[in-house]
Length: 270
Image (tube, rainbow, N blue to C red; front, side, top):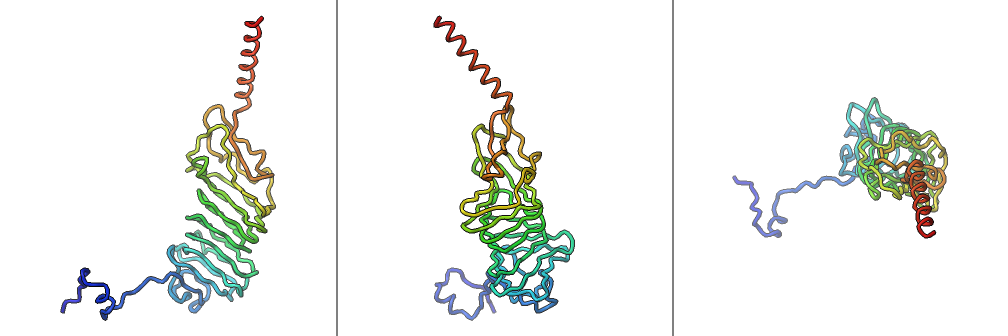
């Protein structure tokens, strides 16, 4: 009995065939039906453990803990916490991470605290209240902030060109709290500098931010620039911008050169 399918058959015949084609679920919902705690236990989800191509829907976590363990990191295309959810933590057993391929939306008024390292693999919208208590790898992504978002550990941004770099955009009415956070710059950054370039690392817009001070940026991790250029970070605390300018010695040389040129012109005219 030959059960192979002739791909040249008309679509209406294929649809009428007795064979059932299984489609991969695009979303899976937390039920806590197994141990009620473990992210990587398929029995805790109605359609299996989320993946980078699956949305994770979380109505509530009565245990107040969603644990990521067994050496397997947690992944999701996006995470949506339902409006009736209680506060809960996403915490690792050891070094497991949360790999996010989309948005993180908390529709409840209860705080979700992420104690795992979070890796943002795409441009993402993050809608709080959410607290990222462990490191966040943003790299070249744009993270749009809504409602209340806290980052309380290391944030890693990357700078490759004047248009390709990691950044935060604050939506209207949003609050970004960086108290306790330090912004580092990835060693993978390829930017080497061009005078006059500026980088809006945090676009405050009509939102607001708190917990920012002179030590929020880790200056030693900024990409090394070509000779004669340096980083100007003096505007970061006020408007989230850093820029590339000539070094003071270069300014002095330029000023001296202009002065000499002016004097020579005056002598020639005399």
